[in-house]
Image (cartoon, rainbow, N blue to C red; front, side, top):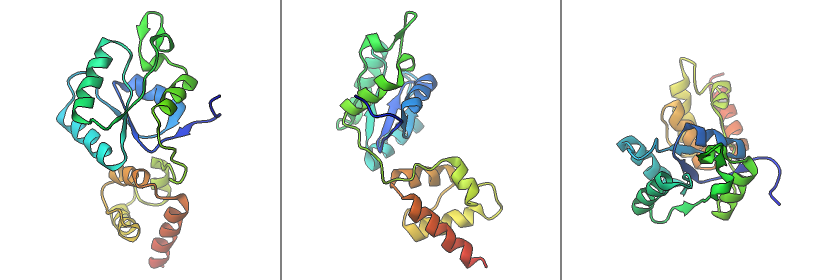
Length: 188
């Protein structure tokens, strides 16, 4: 029996495309990286490599020929990556095979079988959190991100990088809120 609600996963999930991302996001809270098929761009390879080193990755491609070829290429480059698999029967809808056709419960089961790491400590931060804390969308947002990164030891960066760092380094919601209060109090 799969637990209700979304899984919170530390590893980045590597999928083929946008529809796969949407399906995974219905089942789990995690970073999802899309390969966009066979022609994986250098920037995407770099992003997957960074995730592989910092938080681990789970390769979760379609159960068809193309998906297996992409899985082979990724596994060659990232041999210690975890692997998630869906049976064709769970990924089939009107003759189309893909992760995007799977039910959230089937996706959760596949990720659990891949021994994903439960990420219960991290805050699972979203863009809204950055806006609310003044870390994005304000004239002094860059300065505030720099201060936050220095205080909690994850370095600075643009809003997208900060969001990724907050989630990748499992910063707790409490630590984040306390640090924002400290930054706010400095300004008064």
